[in-house]
Amino acid sequence: MRSLRSRLLALWIMLVVSGVATGYLLFESFRQTANARLARSEELVARGCRDLADRYQFFVAGRSGGPIDGQLKQQLTAVTQTALATAPGVEGGIWWADEGSLAYAFPTYEGTGPKTDLPAAELNTIREVNAEALRSGRPASIRQPGRSQVLIVHACPLRGPLPGVTGWTMIRAFTAEGPAYNQLLAGLVVLALTIFGSAAWLARVLYVWSRKINQIEKALGYRREGTVDLPKLSQTGAPELDRLVDALNSTGERLSLERRRATAAERLAALGRMSAGLAHEIRNPIAAMRLKGENALAVADGSRHEAALHAILRQVDRLDVLLRDLLEMTHARDPKLVQVDLSAFLARTIESHRDLASARGVVLVAGTAPTASPLPQLDPSQMQRALDNLIINAIQNTPAGGTITVDADRRDGMLLLRVTDTGPGVADDIRERLFEPFVTGRAEGTGLGLAIVREIARNHHGHVRLIQNPGGAIFEIEVPWQPS
Image (cartoon, rainbow, N blue to C red):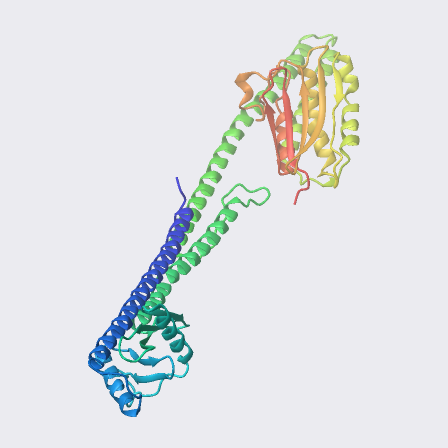
């Protein structure tokens, strides 16, 4: 499915293409109109020259040669006036190769009075076209284009008693002025103001909306360290987007409220399970101490007193360890972050468990550790306690001849601490509740070790997880490499 942004962009492209196409069609239409005007002007000067030839032929009919004087020139001028009277915008005359202009007239001139002076600027062109018509014995034309007009000069031979006489006509065809040109300019202005204005406005809307949508996407993608709630979005100024922002903010508030309620319910449920487990763990040593005390009192000679006292002390030690672990889990301390050399830290942590691992026939191996700078920051005492619990748990669950590997890695700005064993893995029935207090797969275990690991990871704004592995169990602690 196409996004709104791509659709608006397609609409903008269509507007620009439509504007260019419409402007091109208008220009082509104007150019064709100008060409048609030129064709009509050429036809008009040619017809004017034919009319002049007909009038001249009628004038010289029955006349013989004679001197060319002022009276004859006046008569030829009258002939020219009559021939061009119905040709608007056409001027012309009669040209003699030996003497030049014999007559000139511009009967449709729109000035203040009749125009009688031969146009001096076009004199060379008039002389050239008349010479061409006299040489070829047929009509000739010259077209001279200019910036706003095209000059068309036409000449045709005149038959009569005077040799070397030709008639000529001339017209100026305006191509870049007049009503058609003004209509073209008006059309192009309207086109620019509507289509290109709409395209510019749509481009601005597309840019502004894209920028605001990117701001919303960036705000939604930003997560502060240790937070899971949706961020509070700021208003964009666009009513449509602001309604979406309000809906997202409202949804985020409801999700945050429901999450807090779910967290509270989860804590209450966990507290209930922990209370039940704690009662069970405390009740067993108390029952054992009670039994030993009753047995010692039942014998009058006191022979069982010493054994009973040793058994009671062992149960007291068990209760002490239980309460210590419980207090460490429930009284979370803020980690004291320092830069840690991972290789030395892992070696030191593993070394304290080598004797226990050797006694159980398990090989304890230190894996690779990243040496990237800057060094990671963590609380070495807390993190060592977490790794101690994971390593002891792995030793207790790995059969003789197995291997336990402790290594570290860096990925996407996070520090990964892994403990991998080749034991039987974790049973499916406790996998989902593995990190809850008093959940254990061993009869003699308290179920607090992994819960303590989880709390230490949380104190470092990270978490611990069990990774599926067919050849044993992999516990992985993930915390920020450089906490902010």
